[in-house]
Length: 267
Image 1 (cartoon, rainbow, N blue to C red):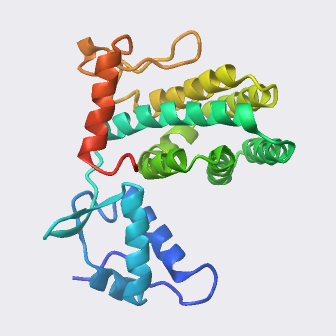
Image 2: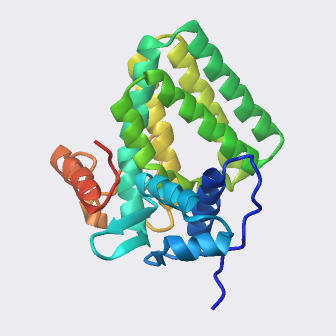
Image 3: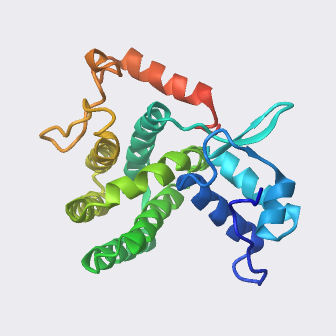
């Protein structure tokens, strides 16, 4: 039976490992490689017409991001990221993004702020051009710059390990033109507070922005995720079968469950 992936053209830029990663990531997101599918280095290398080494590197990276998982004595498989698990990962990510914004507001240099302003301009340009793909790249670059500026290796590793959530949800969030415009305004407000050194406000705005994105991505599956007047989105209540935002113990339990199910948090 022919493999669903097509061969890569072997040239020098970008690296074969990078291109293999991108191809496999795309195939996982669009369902070409469905959840639970076993991934053989040999068959993937044959399908992409490259050696096994770049496939091995790509799979290690995907595992670190939560998109694939290794099972002892069984092999490597596409991770079974159901909606509930993605939701939990999104809740953890919202907290971590808020922490990142607060840290940057406290410690950013003028050069750091200039880099963030450049990132915001890229978001604005992509939004004005009505180009969702370009906007995805600009959005990732802005957040990546923010994470790097923190200089906090643990936080950066944790957010990288939650990339599976970001990859699987970003298309839902940016598909609507009104949502894209609102996201631009939210990024501008966050950067304004970072530049002012208002760490608590920057953290709160970033958390609200990320939670609103979570509500947009999962509103159809979890109707309890509705925007609050302050712009944040509540966690589902126990009545809805989810977590109660007013119960810290249940919040912590949800995070622990997410971490225990797979590589959603890198220590």
